[in-house]
Length: 143
Image (cartoon, helix red, strand yellow):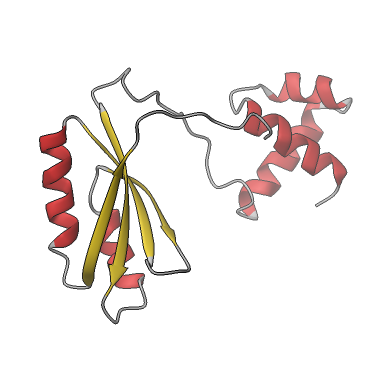
C-alpha cells in the first residue's frame, strides 16, 4: 500500500458513502484510479465491507452490552462460529487476559438482552460470562 491508498482509506473511514468522483477530486487523481484502488483493496480484503453505524436508542435496539466470555478448553473457533449465529451479536473479538472473547450485543430490552445472554451461557464451550451495559458512546474522530 502506498500513500494514496492510505489517504483513500482515511477518507473512506470518515465517509464510506463518498463517491469515487468526490474522492478523486479530494486526492487529485482520476475517478478511474480511485475505483481501481477501491476494487483492489476490496480484493485484497483490506476493505472488508462498507457499513452503516446505527445510533443506539434511535432504533429498536435500546440496550447495548459488552459481554466478556471465558472459555473452557476450546481454542475459540467453535465458540465464535456459534456466536455468529446469534443475530443480536454485532461483533466478536478475541482477547488476551483473563477472558478469551468479548461480544458486542444489542437488544430491544433488558429482558431480551437476558435471553441473548442465556443463549451465550448455554454454549458448551463457555465457562463464564461477564456483561457490561453500555451507558453512552463517544467515538474518537481520529480515523
